[in-house]
Each structure stands twice: as structure tokens, then as C-alpha cells.
Amino acid sequence: MAGLIHRLLAEALQKELTETTAWKINITKVDLSPDLRHARVFFLAITGPEDRLECEQMLKANTPVLKKAMARNLRVRFQPEISFVWDEALQATERVDEILDRLSRERRATEVPASETEDKRTDD
Image (cartoon, rainbow, N blue to C red; front, top):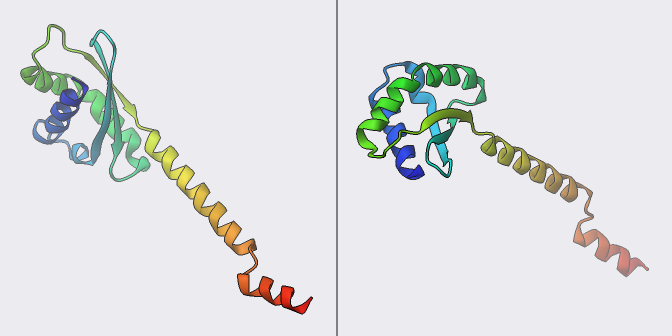
């Protein structure tokens, strides 16, 4: 069900909205409550975090349009309430990658090349 909601909302962003901001939004994940009444829709701006506020405002203003588009294709007893949430996971992953890269560079910079250690052994 979460996958279907994900697909329907992604399609609705492209087909139903005329705002120029809509093309910037990438829905990354949908989490549903156990009773299927609430959907947390995670998103990112493909242009980067600097467009977060603009995208959040556009999604909030167009939630009724997106829910209506979703309802046309989602046959359930209750339409889930939608809340849009900025997806921090990708940024966290990027931060971890940056830290690992930095640590790797630092380790390489402090390592003694193998040829130098061999020279020291032969000198002794």
C-alpha cells in the first residue's frame, strides 16, 4: 500500500500541479500507520536542501489536490491523512560518507610508504 501511495503521489506531482516547484520534488519514502489512516510522505528537493522551505510550502498548499488525485486511484475505506516530511536520511548518509572519506585521506597521509619502511629495515 505504501508503494502504491508513493507512486500515485509522484504521478500527481507531475500531472496535477502547475507550480514550477513541483518538478523539484522527489518523494523518497512513504510510511503508513498500522491502521492505514496516516501517511508520512518523505521528500527531497532534487535541487538541494536550499529549496526545502519552498517545496514544503508548495506541498502544504497543494495537499488537498494531491489527496484528491490519490483518492481517484486508491480504493480504500478511508483515505490516509498525508503529512510531508523532509527526508533527512540522504543528508545523514552523505555526512557519513564525507566523514569516512576524510578519515581515509587522513590515514593515507599519515601512513609511511612501504618502500620507506623496507629501507629502514635494511639499514639496521
